[in-house]
Image (cartoon, rainbow, N blue to C red):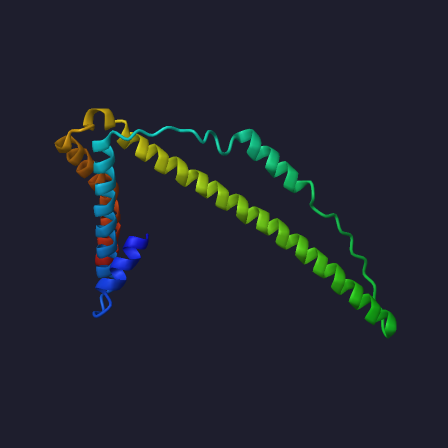
Length: 175
């Protein structure tokens, strides 16, 4: 990410480029970096092991969902109309109760968003791990063989980056 940000900033410092040009430049830099990473790793014979284990299982997910639903408050609000000092006191108490209720709501919304974020990270981990494992299972055949390493690196780089170019060009020509 730092490589892309820095190169786009340096290349666009004295010229104003369109979003399409910046997208193509960024994707090209990522494609070159990915190609070099894959080719060098295959040439060196890098392997990939799953030592993290299962991040989220069905049992853990169900247990977490039950634990958050146990804390839902059961509030019964009476209808009271009051004037004068009683109304002021009732308003202050209602304000405090509402603040506590909002704090609980924010807590549960935060738990929900953290759960969704962790689930998305687990999904991304699985996708990237599976993709890289598919690439690096060829590392035994490519070790110390530059031609095979560059061939597999080019194949997988085109395979994994071409869809991004497709989306960029599709957006450009639909727009």
